[in-house]
Image 1: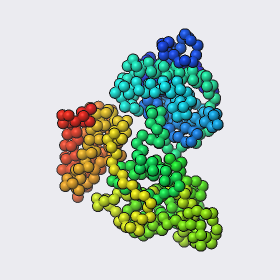
Image 2: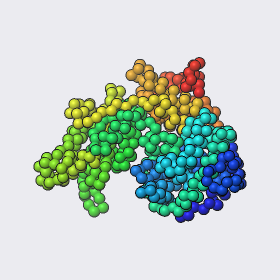
Image 3: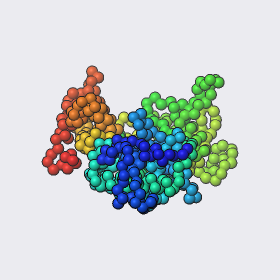
Image 4: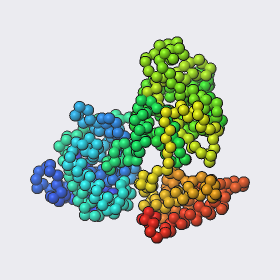
Amino acid sequence: MTVSSSALFSHTTVLFPGLPGKGRVVIPKHLHSASGQRDSARPISWAFVEAACHSLLGRVEVFVQDNAVTIQHATSGQAGGTRLGQVSQLHGQVTWRNGDGVTTPGKLLLIEAVYFDLHPELKTRWEGLVQAVKNTGVSLPCTPQQLAAASHQAAVKDGMMALVDTLYYVWRDAGRNSVDGGISMPPAFPQTFVLLGNSPAGPSLSQDERLLIRRARTGLRALLIGPTGVGKTELAKRITLALQARLISVKGRPGLEDRDLIGGIAPTPSGPAWVDGPLARAFRQAAHGPVVLLIDELLRFDPYHLNVLIGLMDDLNEQEVQALTGQPCAVGRYYALELPGTGEILLAARNQLTMLATTNAGSGYVQASGLDPALLRRFERASFLSYPSEADIMPVYERSACSPLSAGWAYALEVATRAMTTAHGQSLTQPGNIGVTLNLLTEQQALMEEGLNESEAFLAAVQTTLAPFCCPLTSEGVLDSAAVKSLTVTAERVQRPAPGNARMAS
């Protein structure tokens, strides 16, 4: 595919109203790139303006590999949707790929500048625009309303015009208008905000998490402990993505059967046959590449299945494997899994299989069994996770909220519920968590679209998201009115902050 320069200038956008969104608007000379003819008239490329806006809005999702960066980015037009693009660099050669025959070169050039350090002027001007937007008091990624307001500021307008002028000449001089096809969808996009100055490892990766990732590269058995909603499962996913591994998970629950854990004989179109469960799938996949086996809700497994997992986590050397299977194998450490009823023994090299287990340790959680020493000693590392700090979680809430004010209300209410449970002598069965708070903010926005003001929508959303999660049910199957009243009063209180409370007042 060839990218046409005429499309860059004929494009229209409404995302940056500080500049008219179409037509010929000339960039002032003092903002010109060092490239191009001196004193030439340089019109704005509206397609590049929109590419920059999508990046500021967090609409460019990023998956980083060693020599390639794949992006999933928002499309133009009223229909919406997303497209895939990719920049790869091998032996100094840069290649562009796309998924559907259409691409936006501005976003790929920004990746080249920010991640591959290829275009110094472009990187400097992009960082200048990012800082100019931040100087208006906006946190990035921002909302369309925040970007629209910032676009009228002189420094932001100048930063945008300087950027798009450089984008055009970098694109023209690099000659990267040929785009190959063929991109496979990455498993996820965990590095979305690389373009906004965050490291590819992610903005909130703690030292403990970085150590977990490093240890997992050669195989690890780790237990992640913490209350509901602190991100234990998400951490397991981030480790999987960092390893570029396959994620296979199994969740503890009452009534779990062998076939739900290991596998079993089941009807198939060709008759009864063995069908792999999660454990067997993990072992087979480990023969082809790294695998993360996520054992979720560990202490909700019954004692019988916990014994299966205990046996699974005993690794063997090559001599022990030969004694078990009668077959020689390469030097190393292995896990072994015997398939019940078949006599087949599956092997997985230890350095290819990471086992991560999560649990809500504590008397306040429903559990089938306890964390006995035989189980605990199988884990090489136990990490205790706590609720994320305000600094880490507020940017997440602000991206989902209708305003920073509502994000602050939601965070303050979530924190308040932690001291309102029956364990503290209060009426709630459990506190709020990240997932429920995000549901609250989404519901609030939907209610505002129905005509409620910000405060009314927040209080109404509490009744349909946070209350059903936190409040107990009566014997008649309805929410306990006293608990709902307590939660509602607290929600009203966080909207009326005490004097001097900077977070709630902001």
